[in-house]
Length: 252
Image (cartoon, rainbow, N blue to C red; front, side, top):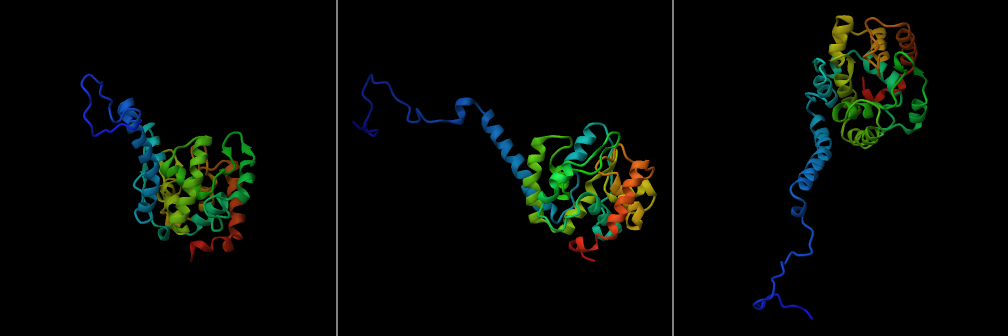
């Protein structure tokens, strides 16, 4: 029989809380709610900041912060894509992501070939296993190192960033935040460190040498290249000679 909740409870009859049987955060204390809020912030942060960074230069990246906390310095100087030698984006795209202008964040055509690339025992892999949007997502919002979790997060972030940003903005941000030596970030700082000149003055060979030290700038040096880096730079120079039709998204 239905209970009329409007009627007074008979004397001696135990009161039954109206919310009994319902689930409440309060049952478990404040921590589940705090953890839920923290998780929502972590998810929303890269989504929102991608929109902000479409027009505002990122002041710092996650990788920079983590390196700094680990005791490394931080040297960087943001310059626009127009203030870089066009040789540098061409060299980096030739080396890291030849289909940069064609894919939408993740290049499934080349992905398996990149993963299967040979490894250099002393200086790390010959090239990275990520597209430029994936590497930008990792540097800005994630962390370094080998992790299936991080790689899984890179993919949706890369698609989102490629949707929001132009290709010019993507390569501009990447070239300004990527590490080119311990604590050295971005094209301008790298050019000054390795060649004592601004990024706008980089020659084709110097740009190829900078591209060749990626993705392992800690063990490789563009200013004092090893034999392996020199050979890789030569290979990048050959690729640059024919990459013109594949970088039309950069304009110019």
